[in-house]
Image (cartoon, rainbow, N blue to C red; front, side):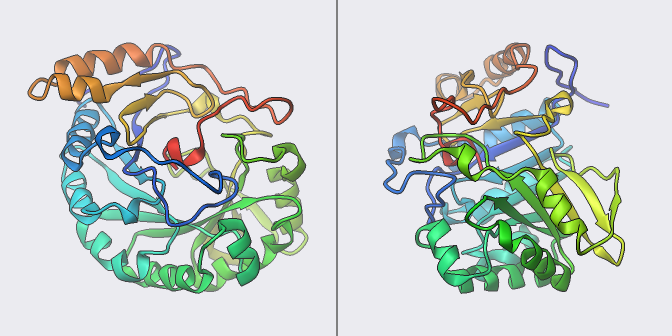
Length: 330
């Protein structure tokens, strides 16, 4: 069966979310501040270091890797990086999350490189609102990217929508219909309280139960036990079998009991939990031991014993996690 990694609570860790850049061509208001300071180049893992880490994790039992950012597709060399990682013996699937802006030109090359599934962020179908949420995004460019991904040959394409009261809750049904028309999946996500974005997260929180109740007024829903290897809970539409609806509910329905993942930031910090600050500096070990993986393996396995049982997100009071979402790996 090969190597298996477990944390201190006996949960098997077989999923790595790996950031390839903290930069993005958008400035989504739930992800980062309007004026971001990005990492200097010397602090960012090289493509060779990212490949080495991917190989190390797969050798220790990781079977799924998701490449994230920032926006992963603005990282120079991303297609070659995907090709190297997808070819690792023992890796079940390489997947990616993107804002879609670069997919008109890169969707097919990514399929050819071995990326199996593509998640694309889409929070509005209204051009002005889309620009307001992303601060500078071009909706038409993203829609072209979604069309390109839908026809490129990915095993599945899924839309990700962060639902916020007062901003896009009224678009839940139109966004769902858009996914139905394309025959692709869609996941509705509760906003995560990461970083100080200059407003109260509680004011805009929209729970998954509210979203599901709204959808149920229009579509009969069928509960599903399907699992994509991540935190989403899925339902099926009785009359549209090609589209699955997922719900990611970090605030209202804690999913930590089945957590199977860790995150790697592009500066080489292994985040043991999205909702905790505890991390391990693997970049230092990578550069101190360029030809010896054992110190990294030992540090990784020791760190997993400290992986928290759960996050404790609270939307009240001071910001708990200062790290922005773009620094956390998507």
